[in-house]
Length: 374
Ligand SMILES: *Cc1c(COP(=O)(O)O)cnc(C)c1O
Image 1 (cartoon, rainbow, N blue to C red):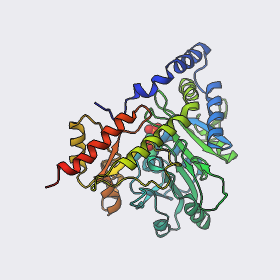
Image 2: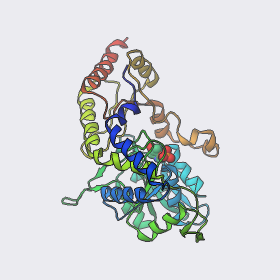
Image 3: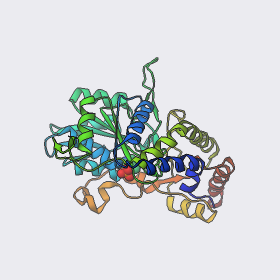
Image 4: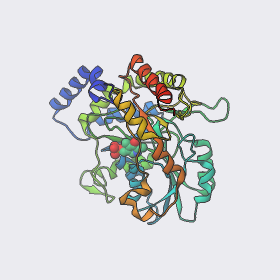
């Protein structure tokens, strides 16, 4: 059996480093907002090439806190892709703002800059870009629009640890996800490219005043003990999780490289006329958090692969506007998102997957096209 993802396998190589990190924190007598969080914040800011990183409790709250810190008027609108993960949309709602769904580019699955402008109104204040599956959005076009309409740009980088963006201009230095807008929300949920042993998150930004406000917001709105400047939250990153993340961060470039090698293997090996492969034009830049294919009979393919011992997953089966929680948006017709949610299937892609397993998956998918021909 090839599992879609086995977190025990993922964390096995760090077993010793994780144990010593946990022991260090356990024996320190200091468990919340201490040296470990500060160290990880500095390391992760350096990794993303931003001037600030603020550790928080999880990815959803990272995004929500940023939107809260920007203090837009109530009912302001935030543009988001219609095929976003539910957490991206929830952050907008929880900040008291209104999501405005814009259809993605059907080939990249990402927010389509050409469609954004039509959705901008007098109430629009921000664009929330989701670097879905580990591929950066078209930030040059999006930032240009944002400047023209005076909008903030929030990156949901929860699937993009280590993803890189190359603008169209020659000689422009490549920039990392998390350093492509005004602020970025990160998740270190255990399944992400950089995963903790529980919930964890962070915010990266080059805006010093925003970072300072966020440091207060995550801690009851308090910059100094028992002095509360804002109506804050409790959204702190634990010392233990920060120590685990510091233990795993040095290997992120290597594990991302392994994901690239496997993605390349899939991209060149899968030859099934019914399968639409993910875009390969930024193979070297993408973080390959997920390898998502499209198939017109997705559920049939999924069952067939399971029969052959191959686990898959669906990211995501139901678009946000069709969720009960967003019943107020159910009337919207968003055909691109709806088709993506119907046809998407995520193949196993993680640093623990072997070449041999990847080849078996490729072979099995290629055989299906022959088997099901009538
Ligand atoms: C995982 C994820 C989140 C939420 O992160 P949590 O830490 O689980 O709250 C948000 N957006 C995207 C795109 C994600 O993949």
